Length: 421
Image (tube, rainbow, N blue to C red):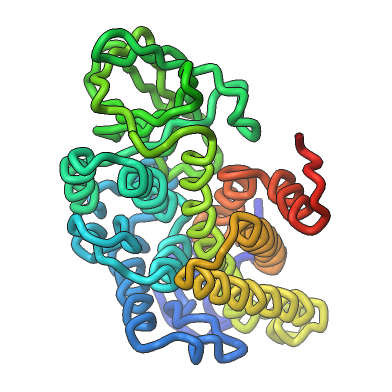
């Protein structure tokens, strides 16, 4: 049994009356926490224009009003809150930084701020929006025929259709060049055989962007739900990304029309360029998770009393952890803003995005761990978001390019030597 002094606080310690109880009649600190108001130590907000701040506030309010009331139960039940998709579509979140076809045409900084706020709510929601926009809409937008664009992009932007991105295979994650999935030309059709796994949105999707090996190199294909020979199944038993659909895709003599091939993508450059779009969004998104963990720990340290009825915020070791977190979050914000400006100027390189993704995920994960430490026993409960963020970030660290692979990309950029080849 957990004693009150080990994590649960007596009501009279705060002098606040209330009926909310969690364990043995003791109320939780969680009900005394203030709503999220942002984290801005170094006046980073001064770097944003009015439109960017408005986009962020819109996304922030959506997360507060629509996601926060349901995310705890969604995570418990391993359920994605699909009821939020139509509203996210109306707000322009899906394919937000694409032009035309019903898309909002936002800047990359505005798009990044949306990702930040969504992941402050939960990595699963940001992952859904990232996949829909960066990994499904983007390849159709960049490499598809005009007919493919006209048919799919408005439906994907409106949320009428959901998509997924099939690149990773059971035996090939960090080395997509080793993929075994094949596509063979037979008359006016392509026949696909193979398997993809760890695919976000797989079973929920009406269309899959699938990458396969052909006699002409690696090509991208649009495979529609219900096509004979195409089956999907969900991956269960996850302790991370529980509020996200994760699936496997299988192709057994799956025949699709020749018109379903993406004509503009040939070789690994196609799928890797899509991953750069997604990694950019992740670099922003995890700042939101770090902010949520930090702000929860900061408020908690002021409320939580220990040793002579003093707040734990008065202790040096606590302040050192908070100082580390706010410093690293600030550096991550500055890195993201500069990367966003470079992207809007079309100057960003994949190696720049590797630094953004690798650094920001690493500091977000450490913020979650330090915050969990500061919350003590309360840190492991779902009364607070810390453990949910921590578990999610363990996955975010390894998907869309592992921490190690991004280190090697950066290493190649600064030495000219490719250590992973």
